[in-house]
Length: 109
Image (cartoon, rainbow, N blue to C red):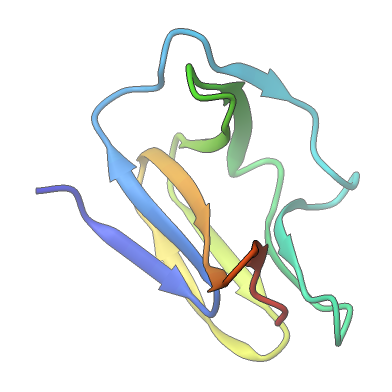
């Protein structure tokens, strides 16, 4: 069973390996990898770029998927949530969504 870590509307699911099609992307900002922005507050779920590398890919159903590779441990920080400690490993980044008839949208933090 894969371990799950959660901070607000962001879930990190530990997986066995990075998909072969996943490509590394540069940090969102010079000092942090942003996992999700809070649209209301401007706060962010973020990791120091020296602790993790972000990857992305588009799967067969054209869904964009995101991943993190954490070499020696990392901390997910947010201004309004407790810090989450991630051990070394590969994680899929999943943002919670709301469903309403006719639309699926990311949850606003």
